[in-house]
Length: 99
Image (tube, rainbow, N blue to C red; front, side, top):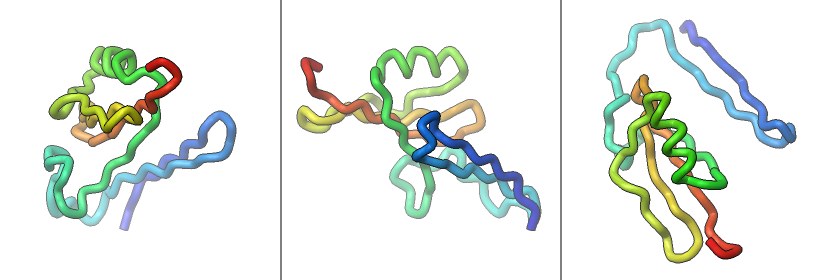
Protein backbone atom coordinates (compact mmCIF):
# COMPACT_ATOMS: atom_id res chain seq x y z
CA UNK A 1 0.00 0.00 0.00
CA UNK A 2 1.26 3.49 -0.86
CA UNK A 3 -0.23 6.47 0.92
CA UNK A 4 0.47 10.20 1.10
CA UNK A 5 -0.08 11.61 4.59
CA UNK A 6 -0.18 15.21 5.79
CA UNK A 7 -0.30 16.07 9.47
CA UNK A 8 -1.66 19.42 10.62
CA UNK A 9 -1.63 20.89 14.10
CA UNK A 10 -3.66 23.82 15.41
CA UNK A 11 -1.63 26.90 16.38
CA UNK A 12 -2.17 26.17 20.08
CA UNK A 13 -0.77 22.66 19.61
CA UNK A 14 -3.73 20.89 21.23
CA UNK A 15 -5.30 19.31 18.16
CA UNK A 16 -3.74 17.35 15.32
CA UNK A 17 -5.43 16.23 12.12
CA UNK A 18 -4.19 13.58 9.74
CA UNK A 19 -5.18 13.69 6.09
CA UNK A 20 -4.33 10.75 3.86
CA UNK A 21 -4.65 9.83 0.22
CA UNK A 22 -4.23 6.26 -1.00
CA UNK A 23 -2.09 5.93 -4.12
CA UNK A 24 -1.85 2.13 -4.48
CA UNK A 25 -3.59 -0.21 -4.88
CA UNK A 26 -5.93 1.61 -7.28
CA UNK A 27 -9.07 3.31 -5.98
CA UNK A 28 -12.03 0.92 -5.87
CA UNK A 29 -14.75 3.60 -5.86
CA UNK A 30 -14.80 7.38 -6.02
CA UNK A 31 -16.89 8.74 -3.13
CA UNK A 32 -16.20 12.44 -3.70
CA UNK A 33 -19.80 13.14 -4.76
CA UNK A 34 -21.47 10.88 -2.20
CA UNK A 35 -24.30 12.55 -0.21
CA UNK A 36 -23.43 13.89 3.25
CA UNK A 37 -25.45 11.12 4.95
CA UNK A 38 -23.98 8.17 3.01
CA UNK A 39 -23.14 5.10 5.07
CA UNK A 40 -19.46 4.98 5.93
CA UNK A 41 -18.60 8.24 4.21
CA UNK A 42 -15.94 10.13 6.15
CA UNK A 43 -15.85 13.84 6.61
CA UNK A 44 -14.27 16.39 8.91
CA UNK A 45 -15.96 19.30 10.66
CA UNK A 46 -14.43 22.58 11.79
CA UNK A 47 -15.72 25.20 14.20
CA UNK A 48 -15.67 28.68 12.66
CA UNK A 49 -16.29 32.12 14.16
CA UNK A 50 -18.49 33.41 11.29
CA UNK A 51 -19.99 30.82 8.95
CA UNK A 52 -21.16 33.38 6.37
CA UNK A 53 -17.71 34.99 6.11
CA UNK A 54 -16.06 31.55 5.92
CA UNK A 55 -18.42 30.47 3.12
CA UNK A 56 -17.71 33.66 1.17
CA UNK A 57 -13.94 33.23 1.47
CA UNK A 58 -13.97 29.50 0.63
CA UNK A 59 -16.39 30.07 -2.25
CA UNK A 60 -13.77 32.28 -3.90
CA UNK A 61 -11.41 29.30 -3.73
CA UNK A 62 -13.82 26.84 -5.36
CA UNK A 63 -15.77 25.44 -2.42
CA UNK A 64 -19.48 24.77 -3.02
CA UNK A 65 -22.22 24.80 -0.40
CA UNK A 66 -24.01 21.44 -0.16
CA UNK A 67 -27.67 22.15 0.56
CA UNK A 68 -28.07 25.15 2.83
CA UNK A 69 -26.93 26.50 6.18
CA UNK A 70 -29.06 24.97 8.93
CA UNK A 71 -29.62 26.25 12.44
CA UNK A 72 -29.92 23.88 15.39
CA UNK A 73 -32.07 25.62 17.99
CA UNK A 74 -30.14 28.63 19.29
CA UNK A 75 -26.86 26.79 19.66
CA UNK A 76 -25.25 26.18 16.24
CA UNK A 77 -25.39 27.09 12.57
CA UNK A 78 -24.15 24.16 10.48
CA UNK A 79 -23.43 23.38 6.84
CA UNK A 80 -21.38 21.21 4.50
CA UNK A 81 -19.17 22.33 1.65
CA UNK A 82 -17.27 20.47 -1.04
CA UNK A 83 -13.85 21.62 -2.04
CA UNK A 84 -12.59 21.65 -5.63
CA UNK A 85 -11.56 17.97 -5.35
CA UNK A 86 -14.95 16.94 -3.94
CA UNK A 87 -13.83 16.54 -0.34
CA UNK A 88 -16.69 17.04 2.12
CA UNK A 89 -16.13 19.46 5.00
CA UNK A 90 -18.55 20.46 7.74
CA UNK A 91 -18.61 23.94 9.24
CA UNK A 92 -20.14 24.78 12.61
CA UNK A 93 -20.65 28.21 14.16
CA UNK A 94 -21.52 28.26 17.85
CA UNK A 95 -24.23 30.82 18.56
CA UNK A 96 -24.56 32.94 21.65
CA UNK A 97 -23.35 36.20 23.08
CA UNK A 98 -25.75 38.26 20.98
CA UNK A 99 -25.60 36.05 17.85
